[in-house]
Image (cartoon, rainbow, N blue to C red):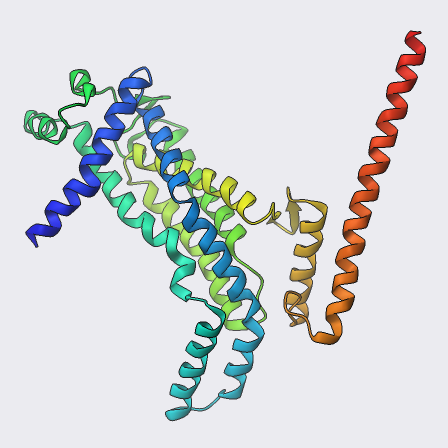
Length: 324
């Protein structure tokens, strides 16, 4: 077990503490800004995982009709039939190159980061002389930030080492709500429509459970960790938006952002989910019609852009004529 403690300290704790301290030194002795910059760098490093997760989720969505067919085939059966169903399901996953765990990659990777960050905040700004002595042992010899110890923990009226519940109004309530709301939007963007009622129920449960759970946990988190999670969620939404091809954010029955084509595609997916069919994996007879519909949407978008350009050109020429 000792080897795991050494690896934890040398691979996670010391790099985190030294990075936060160095950013503090460079960013005008502002620990809040150092947390934000650290969060941005972590999310940038995780972009390959986000891309892989997005591809895995699209593959999972594409095989949903086949999964449902396997489940219907063995519905109400038990014993050997259930084992056969599991074997066929895993065979389908292998054939499609899908790993159910792969869809959770960024979340799994972030858990040790959150735990390490929680410990790093406490150890970077200790409240006891013993903590100060231990902190000096964690600094790399080349890190100039050791001269700035003790660090200032104040940021926009928050003490980053104290629990969010101890913060002044409105932060003690606003931070949990912002963390939960940003996580809800991120979950909404990564949840694809499905025709499987059980999968749909699971998606709906996860969509609400995680944001509520993390919003409640944030109440007892150090404010610095809450700031990290909040900005991690916000940056994750931005990255997911572009990685997914500018997919719209669907909230409260309306689609926001995205392109005309992606909003139309999302509307088709939701309509297919409501009708119990899959818009993303059409039958061979319907593929030509879907391709034609997509081409019509693209042509309408191009026509709209051309008309807008003509109107802008005409207005510009009128202004020039008036000026002459």
